[in-house]
Image 1 (cartoon, rainbow, N blue to C red):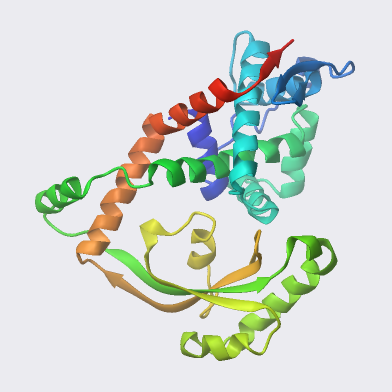
Image 2: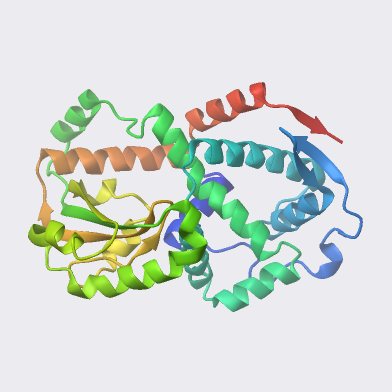
Length: 313
């Protein structure tokens, strides 16, 4: 499994230890950042020597060896191309998503957020650099999946696997509605915190899915989306931990590009029908693709490089 896939799994699930976290590189091993120069320009966006130095420090935490400077610069060029495409398509994860993933990552290493922050700062990586990396690693697979299709297994392959399996796998089936307290982008700074508090307070008053539309009429600019039947393996990674941790009939809220959202859990049950089996088998197939590397990701990045203006110094 590539480090990118390991770190993606770590930040989403909090299950993979951070190499070197309990013995980070001393300051003498961190490249000096005193003189900041332009190391590369990607579509008119500069990558500085300071950026490269921080990435080299990060690579040392990953226990990579060899001549790290060119590797770090190339990694940052690729990352900048991905970041620009993520912004163009508008599929970035939210700041709250990244902060939550950072907390899970720290916890998976038996550290508090403050301790993790201190380690990153002392090692020369910095929290901002690490979180920027996390944001791209969490957002990029969404673009690849949206462009090339998430399900790699054909219907015939699913049928074959069902026939080969002695028992159909069991999974959890949810019926969900999405409650959105809309926040226009122009008003996010002014009313975002107020809307978050309003959404959080509303969860205790949510009457159930049958009365969801009547519930929404009691609030200004609240919309309800019927998500229908969602199998656990198909749950979007940003929502999966919240659904698992849900107490009662709603999840905790998330700040997104649309505003403040939470899910209403209308029904939940264990199933092992053909649709459930298909969801499980396809999720397993996607997991194998992530472990082996996704050729569609490489193809997408190659296309971006071919069209980009990249100047290296």
